[in-house]
Length: 286
Length: 276
Image (tube, rainbow over all chains, first blue to last red):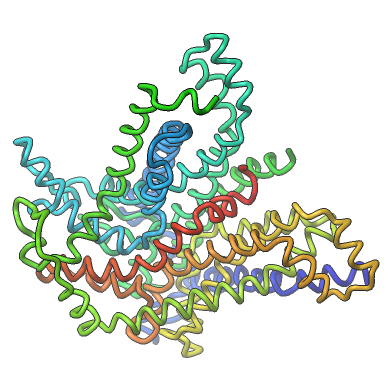
């Protein structure tokens, strides 16, 4: 009984997750080697690696991979650096700390479609947007953000969403620091720079790992922000791998090519996952 | 000690700096809030109008034109049901791994997390085809299933790390006293890990409420959630910022306010207890 019970309790979760993983995977592999266009259901048959060839030689492919990595890297860098800075700033008491926390965390709870449309229209519109008016106020020519810097605009939106998350994780970590050690360092005349380098930053190592891991899970497949603002454009300037696959599947109706692309996305995610799981695994052992 | 350092120049400087950063980051939301109560003309006025007579017109229009309540109901049903369902599946698994240590536990946990690493788009075509074949496209059920499964790994992890905090001896004592498994779970485990259950549930509620990839691809007029309703405002015809703002505000307000009250729980949960 002692052996059977845990297995029985584990079964529902493991079985559903296994199905959730294996059924789509097998279907995707199958679709990727056949001719499968939703608009031409009469054309079928095994075509080998043609879909892969088509997807990988598509000029959009290289751009999409670069955009995915740029988006991921930039957002992680921005949120970690500014997250630590803000966390250090609000770690000590000041007037209205509770309210500041509430204001800071808010963007994290905003749904991506609202986030994207709000930035696209009210902030970044080249004529009526707030940024355009700030630019005009200082006598500069307003920038058409989504047309001229589409990927950068997406990076701004996604960073705005995830910065609060990083900040709060770092803040939680800072609160568990050894106060006496800090006091001692201050008594001994350690400058703020020295305190940062030898006390704060080393203490935050583990939480940086957590932030990077969780953001990676969510940011490899940023979709709604692109879907509602640039539509991947202009050209492919803001298309990431997730959006490219979506375009193949539901805009070009080519399920075969989309599946080949999906397998590539899974590969990309797995490379990231292996790297991350090592890192998290180490942290778990501590 | 703390009192002593109050009202120093550093304190004042920190207050100013922190408020500046907070207001800057909150600014887009504050602007959204203002615009929702403007008329369409005021919304695009140059220079922007900061003082105006607020109107509730936009909120009426959003409900009339696009049936806000219908989408809101879909959001409530899909996020609440998927969260409850997820907890029901995740809790036994987390319990088994936390209190009956097996050799494979760590592998199972890692494997579960790795399924979360799979980008949703990788499963888009198969899930879409399956939903189509089983006539589940644009139904609440399809979204509930997908939300539950995509949140399940996180839920198992969070509950697992919450259960790990409870000493095994307490549960053993209950068993010695002849408690059944059900009694052990509801009378001992649940009260002790209420915080963990709360943060897991809260997070999944937020994630499902804000989920956009699957709801955009699997649902539209029938089962569409608030995320899809807002996306329908992205069409470029005309500038209806006041209405867009009102709709956005109604879509995010429930979960943002909810988030304010539960932020501490949420953050602790989301780090799997790795950051304290």
